[in-house]
Length: 392
Image (cartoon, rainbow, N blue to C red; front, side, top):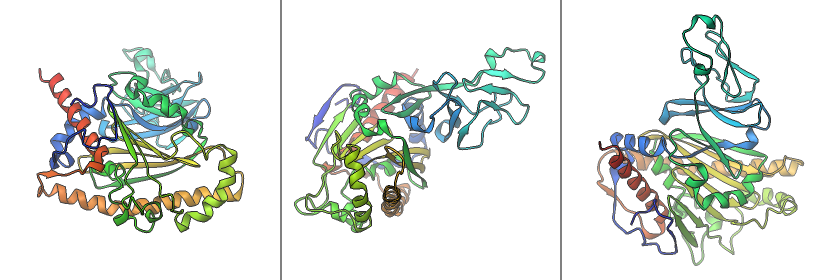
């Protein structure tokens, strides 16, 4: 079955992708990682931020993209348009900006003071008449950028437009509360593990009762002791699942007070009855969004090398912290999120060390880990298609 090239959408057939073991080398082999880098990472649309970070002309955020060896400035120009500019002066390559974010009307190189506009155009350069080139040829280099559901995506070598790439997922993102987000809490981490091993941890609930007995325990139990998803769907390269919620469960103790304080605000904002509440949207290759009352939990994982990756976790909120109770609730939710994630890090890194030892030829997914299997299937098919395309 060709997973990603068609418009297949399969629900509730956990064996549709087969049951065969998965080559372990996919998770540590530098040669395989290099194929992924070229076939997947350089060609895919990748989320790197939200429009709420760029509220007015001159606003910018800087993003370091290791797999491409690039530093990017995401800028809202004077015309209101978003652009993704390489953070590299076209004179000698010096990076223009060191700040993570800010607001500027121009970007000047600290080396020889070449100055660029927020649209990337070269505005001035000392003694420029002595150069055998034109200002037009010296504009900052750009990469493709687009938005969907308030989320900003970039692509270095896109093979199609963003909405075509997302397919039916684009309309779903447009309907979610993240499209209306005005602020967020962020947690960034680096982990000594392959991007797929890191990402897979958040695609399955098989580990919850063992790794998170205290923090996730109230959400599982009864007839579904592992908290397996109640349904899933595969849509081309992308996938969704509906997170099962224990009807007899309660919030973890650390969240009971924050959620009690948040309830009136959530009801007033209409966030207690959102479409796709409790649904999980996974976009190939590295993004997922979990829809819960009150906030949208976003997580993406970027590769740094075959055995190292960086994750970005965000909780998106609508509206500012108008009361002390709302602020406390949001801060406590982020703190609990970090606590839960800290329980994952060690176990993921232990898995990476075991795989990188070469002791295993294969790993195994059970039927409820179908989202993990789907990711690998899409990775395999994307790499093989790239190999065929570049064989000459």
